[in-house]
Length: 99
Image (cartoon, rainbow, N blue to C red; front, side, top):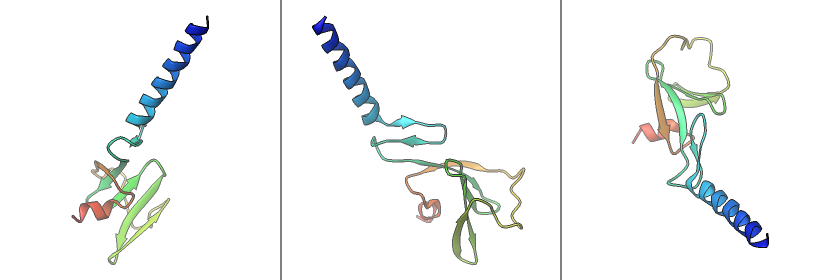
């Protein structure tokens, strides 16, 4: 009985360590120590707007400055606009695209 309990505990510890070391795949991105932390965005090229669904945040550029918020200014109309799914290692996606 004691050996069975030891093997069960070892299995749980090993499985938990493997999960933590490889990262977790979530609905919107890959998280964990693996090869780095990733952030998934929807990018609307016609408006130069990024949307980060994990935090419900928009990022947009007006007059050369980047802004962020839960809502876009009224003059942005993204409904029905074509968008791309992008994945970056940063929470400032425009910096990655500038490279």
